[in-house]
Length: 373
Image (cartoon, rainbow, N blue to C red; front, side):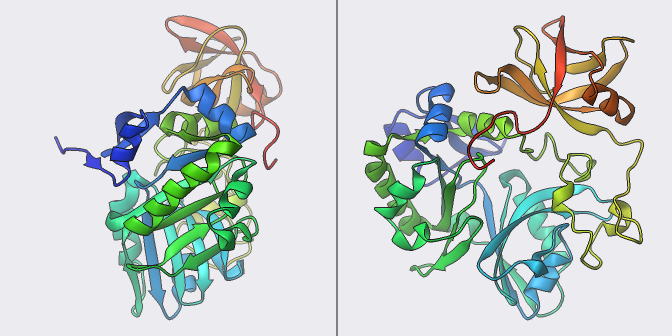
């Protein structure tokens, strides 16, 4: 068994009382206080997350934007320099190799942030599909990343890095630093306003510590993976490996907004869109739906979903949890395409939790209101 990697902020996390876990081969805090407290801090004040496990790539060379655009489902060519774009890195069958953030800085430079568990596979896939003259760099092993999220994030950041505060939503910039540029973006994974930093270890870790200190009077809390997962689930955001896999398309996951019907050819287009650019639906693919549990019960990954009328198994939970803000137990599940519409119109269904079948009802996403909705 491979020993998990200790990240640069690990000793600081332990000093702060972080409960450390092995997450895809990286040692990261799952929580510092309680997951509920940390979620509440992000929704009302601010939270600070270590995301150093994620991968950062730099794609350079003549035509870098066009090269990356051919590999993702959304249209990077339509994005202005200094902007970030969410998209799916798709295979020839329209399946999700990963969901990524792309940052366009010029026609000849694009930065990418990818999921930790997919970094090596993404790197191989992208490098193998780049044209001559376009290269990929992976500075991830020597970089630190963090996310500052919450309604008071801007106030806190203004005391530490004023250039970053001026970014518009989904804006991005590069700050020169010894050892490489610092990528700063006004994005996040919580549904709240916030900023993300990726760059050389010493420089970014210093900013992280300064934000921790400056944020204390504003109610800032260090937050772990548990809060990050619950916050994204409250928003109905997908997690790769659960809602997204190589067997699921963006349309299966309710991410049609991340598929451009206007741009030219891209890998997987023929499976996702017809000749006129209309979405193709594949009857053998399940659809992702949101639900909440009626009464007590906390659904978890792999819980079975069935029709209450027929007893037939119709799907499986991909992510689940408990949130007072979302009304109790809730989650996301892939269900048979034939049942998805019935369920959305009120057809009764059950989820199996600890040998009990509990009633569930369809929920639209996001599960909570507020933030940037």
